[in-house]
Length: 137
Image (tube, rainbow, N blue to C red; front, top):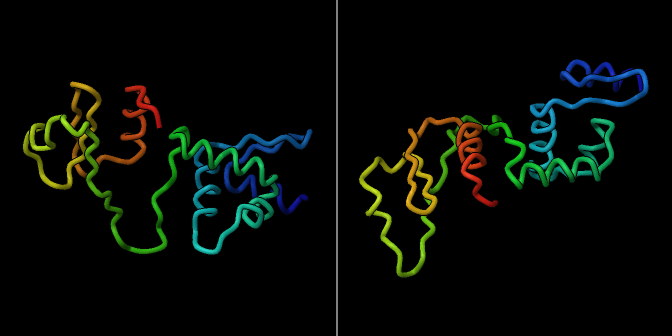
């Protein structure tokens, strides 16, 4: 247990004398990201960090709901690129109606409001904007 606590403290987790732990969001995100790697399981990752699998599953739900922003996958040198996505009614306006932009810009459209961001906008900032707009996941 002492070795586990030392490992967790090195990550920035606060470990109290009572055994309770306070996990920073960055560490939670890192742990969740590990579960998304090929051949990784929630049980194995939870055991590595000394937490219960159901707690890790709750963090995964937070990430899915946009309440926890995951770090970029650094396993390969490829740049992360998101595919453009336009959601509109079948009779709604065409995507070109939002003006011209480079194919790599990020556009968030909610009703009549369109927010256009540079392609290098951090994912965490995009998630903050989407949460501020109150867009359901």
